[in-house]
Amino acid sequence: MSGSRLPGFLPDDPEEEALAGPGLVVPSGPAAEGPLELSTSYLGLDLRAPVVASSSPLTGHLEGLLALDAAGVGAVVLPSLFEEQIVHEAEVATELTHREAEAHPEATGGYTPALDDYNAGPHRYLRLVREARDQLDVPVIASLNGVTRGGWTRYASMLADAGASAVELNVYRVAADLDVTGRQIEQETLELVEAVRAASPVPIAVKVGPQWSAFGDMARRLADAGADGIVLFNRFYQPDIDVDRMAVEPHLVLSDADELRLPLRWCAILHGRIDASLALTTGVHAGTDVVKGLLAGADVVMTTSALLKHGPSHAGVLLEHLRAWLEVRGYASVREMIGAVSQRTVRDPAAFERANYLATLTRYANERKGW
Image (cartoon, rainbow, N blue to C red; front, top):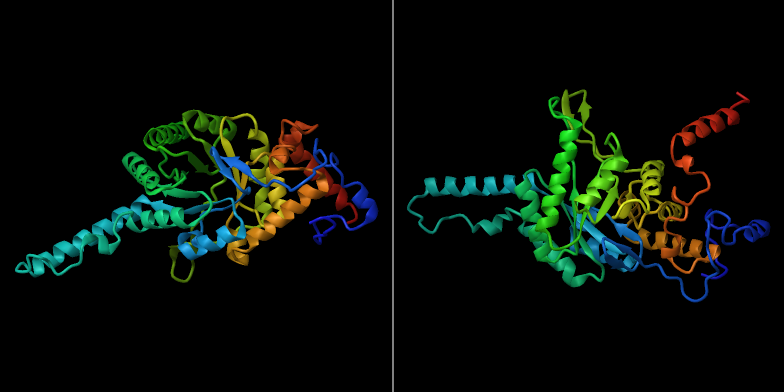
């Protein structure tokens, strides 16, 4: 990469190039010699690169997983296994079996195929975990979205037994019951993490949304409850209303780069303050987004929408941009840069807090004085 230029990413002007040495934007950055090291550590796992393909249709089949592996990702996260879906499939299969048995009582062997043929339960998912584990060169992280305490713990254990390197708990709950308090939800979430930690022999990450009254405190308590990592943030899909049919319908909108700022802020605030790995997700589309996430303190950055838009090979583009940035800044490895612009290291820690709000409004007003 020596002497190379990526449009819009590295300086083209000679004078600007002279200012692009170590220490301009980040507090440190010794001159690097030899090959750049992109490896990082996440959930206690050694990853070859800090870009992780998060849960998406691309990670739901072996072909997509192999393409992502070939593009250089550090790990893959499979789509979530939903407890409700497992229960529904099992109920449908049971209903069909009973219906056929009652219709043809003389068929003692039954006319319906074996239950496994219906793919009821987690059988398809466990098969994907095993196949991915056997054929990929990177850690395979299973994702789980449960409903009951028993479901969370039982399926987490099954995923580990199938060969998952780690399990990501996709915590998603709409507090629609007006009699349930925020403290109750927090406590139930913490007890869930404790239960899964006790049942799972592999590391666990907790993927949460930002809608907690004091997220910093909650993040610390999640780590204390046994979470090996926290994924910031779960991007919940919101329902829409079809005004013609007067019905509620699901609506999927892919993320954009502006959504990076919320997880960026919290990675910067939490870095070095809790005993858990940090993964930044949502809004990671370009190489610059990867750099920002790592500088803020994330151990890995996860991306979904960009890979869906541009294909699995886009992961390689992100890594090339990261490698170019490391080279021009004089870093020898990714590990050296992680947290270099976190709240603990910047000159003005308040920049990640309320002062940033005032500064943003003031700057915007000054830029618009000519209106």
